[in-house]
Image 1: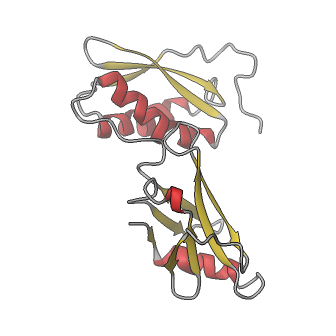
Image 2 (image 1 turned 90 degrees about the vertical axis):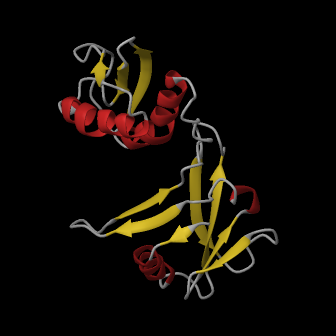
Length: 193
């Protein structure tokens, strides 16, 4: 089941009020089940919905969901959180980048899933990427940061409060996360996008 929170509905209604009458929204997933998976949310003028779309009644508008994307979006939540700069729209879809490995899957597989499904989408907004180097016998995770993360002055905060916390939530037997990146070198160690 896909959930659209009341704050997201209100946000969408404000956007749709500026569109031609009977414009709704359409949601689909591009490259589902892969690390490149992404959600496409677009205006849906009258007649642009597909006969196979599932229509979700959101009160004053309809969210059309592409049939092939339904299983990937099962359990997803669309939310809007207001803040001082307006707000942030988020679409959390646990199955977007593939199925979560079972708890008895190899530790490297579970960490790779966390990196692709949770960490890399977070750091991508700053032009960053994180790669798994190894898991030590003591269950320390050694990571390599690249792109906008390489040389970033906030890497210590990102590592401890973002990456390590997220990995330990998903893979509790992890003791610590170690940064193996040479932050002083590289062709473009600071993001300038």
